[in-house]
Length: 447
Ligand code: HEM
View 1 (cartoon, rainbow, N blue to C red):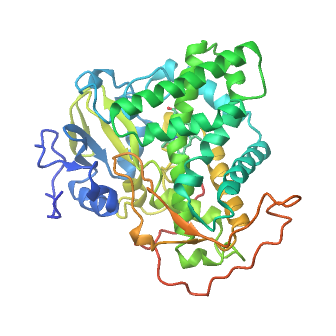
View 2: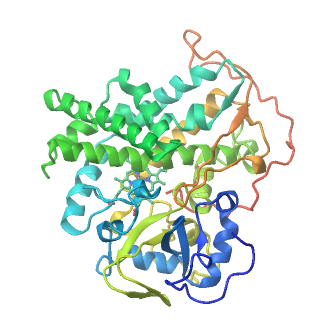
View 3: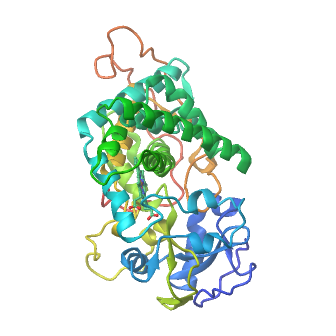
């Protein structure tokens, strides 16, 4: 990618590979906000590459994003026509290929899957979800609490959502570690074959789980899906669980680690952990606005050639919404409140908006508060600007978040984060400069 100014003209769908801006390389991962700033020079939409040779139109304007997200007549979510034009081993297919679930279907089919998953998620009581998250957090914290150092991505944020999902899906505890390891292998796979074999393993866990719940129902999402009045088959329940796991795992894990990276390196949050200036809720809101875990997604396919805010887009080609660019677009917003009450787009909007918005924010906030409750002097072990981010067009996630703290013994009998006397924070005031690279936007909405 060059740093030369981009042409001030609408995105041209016939743009050559050299004109298209790659969203898959290390430059984009290192500083996506600089790339979004340049992409805005094209207007509301820009020509991008999601992977080498995979072209798409990226919507960077908040207003245009809302127009697409709400327009089910012009745009379909079904990728099958486009999919037939892409090599079977394309790295974007795991995130973009058709499946019988809510994400990749329109109309009544979408409504049926969505209703089932939304209804079942809404049956989870917030206080139970908080307890489940506490248990998951404690299990993980106990594995590194005595060490005094930890990678908060690998040892905490990447594992916690799966432990929570296992619990709410009703997966027997003995299967938890296997599921966590298979999911880790799927996301870190060195090759499409490795990812494929990890996926097969995950599907096997979920099939066994559905078979178990068919024999014996419990108070869990799997049993509720089997009994839902829309009448899902056992195979469909497996796909819905897989979708929820895949759709929820990576963004949950990124939200927890990105928020922790901000809290542990931004002086405005410096006192939060011990005495509270800005809270984890403020940090979550800031990240959802400025650096959402799913940066670009909501892939739409025009049913006919369309003109979107001045950009001509051929039918059946992918139109991707940049939640990050839309959230942070400065001149895009009309004066006064936004048309949808000023919400950020981190959970998208319209009929496919995330049905797990509230539980996701609750899990993230609980996981962060539990960690900082136990490790009250935890601090980042490398400067913020030396943290590295995974490459890829869709997710915004850290590769690692090294941290240090005074070792504790949380498995000591009769103690809990709230009954044990936490060590007093040993940090000197005004820690050396590890502030985030760009001044964060004000927190306005916690999702
Ligand atoms: C911080 C965490 C999360 C973020 C940022 C997030 C974000 C999103 C976004 C942006 C979409 C829209 C995708 C699209 O239009 O293509 C979406 C959809 C979805 N999310 Fe989430 N999500 C999170 C957590 C979860 C969790 C925990 C679950 C379930 C356990 C979940 C289940 C789903 C499902 C099933 C859909 C598809 C909805 C539909 O197409 O009607 N998400 N999510």
